[in-house]
Length: 101
Image 1 (cartoon, one colour):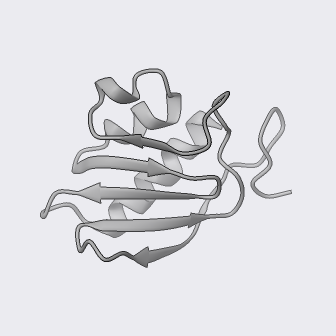
Image 2 (tube, rainbow, N blue to C red):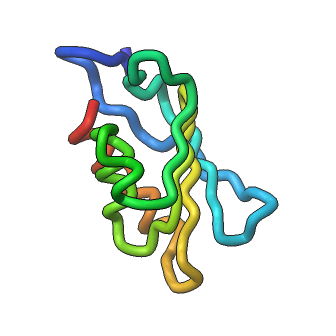
């Protein structure tokens, strides 16, 4: 039941964090699917303004230290400033998923 979307669903959680070719980006693999946006398969944001129509994207872009966001079906990649901690961002991601699912 983990990762279901909709009413009564359990919150998604981060299963693992994976390194990417970019040392300031981390891919977080999730326990299920992110709630989709109509007509959109993948979402990418570089500013808070560009994410305004996406409840999850706007919350993620507002996390201190996040510089861009890429959201796939069951993963999220967060790019960060050099001073931001990837583990702390993973915890912020889980909190954002709990609020937005």
